[in-house]
Length: 207
Image (cartoon, rainbow, N blue to C red; front, side):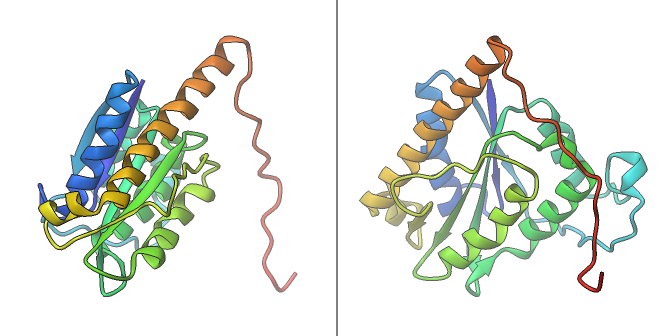
């Protein structure tokens, strides 16, 4: 089993990476393979709502990391999405990347367990968690929780490691994700599969 951990920070080894590394270590201890995927510092396009991805299964824009994320997600069993906090919300790049990846390649994420984490110096973590958790809930993904909200505090990686409760929260998150992955795997072995999805209705509020 493999978990992809998406780092929404342009800093390859910053605070968000540090938090994701703690989660990855806990997963590795349970025999789960992990890979931390960097969003990088290059621009990421926003979704323009063109709808051309519906028939292609990928985004029409192929000049950034989004289609790469979709391809990687196809073979993954679970995910962790991490973001630093900018102006009390997630980074614009991870929001744009997740909007497009889930809209164009939602099939690669559906029914797979996932978690979101946020890293901040002080505030804005809960708003950030709320924003990127919505991608998971609309894709029928089991959302993994921990012993506190999935956040760490600190202005440097060293300060993050001093956030004892935050470190513990990341560790427990990894253990919980490993547990759910193993439960899903055990269920498949005895014939329990994902439920059939019904998409018969699409209504507007004026109807």
